[in-house]
Amino acid sequence: MDSLSKLYTFNPKALWQQFKKEHFAFWMVCLYFVIQYFDPQEIYKRLDFMPWDKVAIGLAFLALPRDPCRRWVRDSTNIWMTLFLVVIYISSALAIFPAVSWKHWFAFLDWYVIYFLIINTVTTSERYFIVLAIFLLANFKMAIFGARTWVKRGFGFVSWGIEGPKGFFWNSADLSTEMLMFAPIAFELAMYVKPYVKRVTYWFLMAGSVAGAMTVMGASSRGAQVTMVGQGGWMAIQRKLKLKVVVAIIAALIIGWHFLPAHEKARFERSGTDQTSVQRLDYWKAGRAMIEKHPFFGVGFFNFAPLYAIQDPSHLFYGKPQLPHNIFVQVGTDTGLIGLFIFLVLIYRNLKLTSEIRRTCARARDAPGFAPSVARGLALTTWGFVIAGQFNTVSYYPFLWINLALTVALANIVRKAAANQQPVTSIPQANDVVMGAAAPSTTQASVPTVQESQ
Image (tube, rainbow, N blue to C red):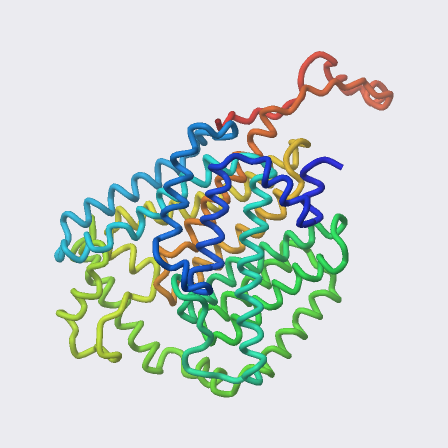
């Protein structure tokens, strides 16, 4: 059994042995994922005396030049990421309230740095699988916590939903979005590794998907709940599930609706007319007006809230201005139509690369076997971010940027496998002669033409 097949078993010893073989720079990338998603400083307060995530990133960059597996990954996504950063700083310089913009100067810069660190460090199949295992385990922890909280409430409703660990996932809606970024990948990977793992490990991965769905239900975010149903439907179509499986999914949805608290059902019925909906609709209307007045670079990075407070003080239903609760309105007001176009291109690149990964794997036998399944999961999570983002302001949260980094890293690994594929000789078959087909050459390599990504 090769090293990658051993990792498919999710055996802790195999994962640890492979991890020890890797370079210090990769260790620091893994440490960043642990800090970002496990949040040990919140669990152990004694550790909360310095920004450990930034320390890990800094050490990773210092060690990267000596990493034998480092790569400068060439992908057009890199250019669009850089252009987005440039537009953000131009918008900040031209902002109506420049001080507000510069106060948030790191909101995207952090993800820009982390994106390049991940794609240039996670360059082998083994490294990718280890990072994926950390990502899944951390999210499984959050999913189990959310599901358990909902069960303890007797599947009841509370106004604040379910709070996650402090940071990006503390808010109920943000925790729900993270579950949308986790559950599809966990499901797809579980389906792939099923022949390699023990039954308990397979059901452990599947339980993560179920717990993620339960967290979304208990967190009371209508946008996330609608998105989850859409993800499930698209997953069923992609996998061409058997009729009995589709019936089981429909039955699960009916049961889920039955257990949904009456108060939550009432919130769906009041959608568009309740105070939350009216406030968001007003935000979107005001955001569109701001973009029309400042079409090129917007009103300034993070300038929506202070400008709204001045223009529409009578519509502050919650006492103070909030972000616009829509990723496209947020990016449009922050950076204008120029920045919004780049943002849409980045989302498109994410989806396009997942399709490219699956196509390349179909013809490159040396590509990692898990890649097509993970690519399907990454595509579903991208759509989850887009749909949930129509009701929540998560443009500069880890959702899209970590997903994009994982997609570009996987595309690079798959391209490299295709480019390094050894020539294959072919012997003419009897049927070729009988049917009059031209026999393939025994000297030419039948290697797909894939541009080297290094």
